Length: 86
Image 1 (cartoon, rainbow, N blue to C red):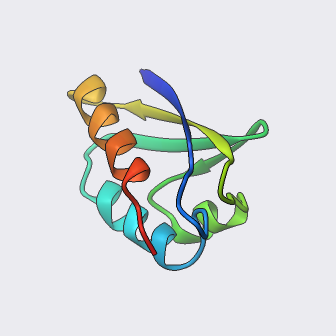
Image 2: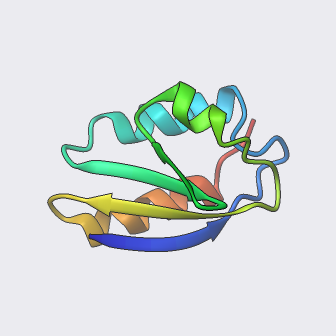
């Protein structure tokens, strides 16, 4: 298991379009990808779960990746979130 904290800097946070982009990005990863905000955990492969966290700009979230090449994938995921746009 690999985990890392990241601050969401996208103007709209992880709402609607950015959340859908994130789900598309993690969908093909063969392992598990979770997002944790304020102690609440969500499956990052589910748009409904991601949206239910209510992640806005400036929110710090924890990403948890479990599976093959998890450290490498986690770095790519952090980069993806840091570069998200609307």
